[in-house]
Image (cartoon, rainbow, N blue to C red; front, side, top):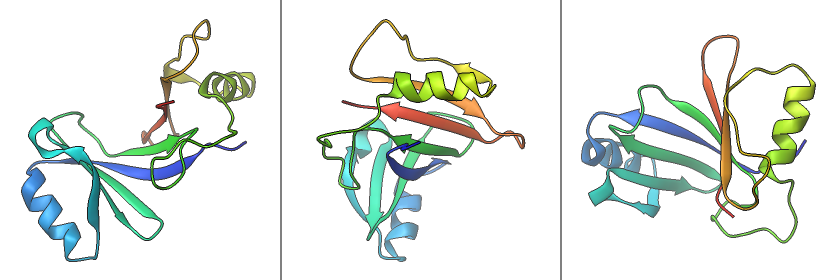
Length: 123
């Protein structure tokens, strides 16, 4: 099962303070809008998202169809197919992608310890 690019989406209290903190670790912003309270930072292959006021918990995020630079891949497994595979294995989903659609969609699962897993396709 190919889930796409992995990142950790962090629920932060102060976007500017979090950005400054992670920049000390060598991360640089490469996507997002501070005015909209979110940024995506990168250090090599490591990607983190900073989201102020958008959700309550940190989220493990997978982006089918994107490479590590948020560029569209020529071939990838669609989010709806990933959803079907997981449902067939009995994984409960908190939200689901509409399987009658194409293009961007997402679903959310919760692991046994309560950690949200977002599979979020943007293409």
